[in-house]
Length: 107
Image (cartoon, rainbow, N blue to C red; front, side, top):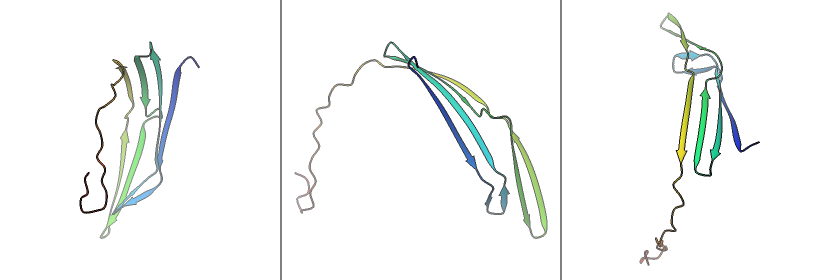
């Protein structure tokens, strides 16, 4: 309503093994809001990692030596973007050449 565009974006990773490392599951949720004013000025706001601090674990065992790592990350991001459109692009005078499969390929 009112010319606003609301977006929601999310991603998730399941438990996975990468080489000798075993990682836990991870997920994120992002959202954004966009509005165009005067048909030329577009304002966008985005907030990434809406969910709280993420905890990652990493386990591995090689030749009887085991290791367990826990990492905490707080990667929230808030951004604002403004875009101004100066007008339309003129029609191009470029003409594409035909390419065929015969020996004289370009005409």
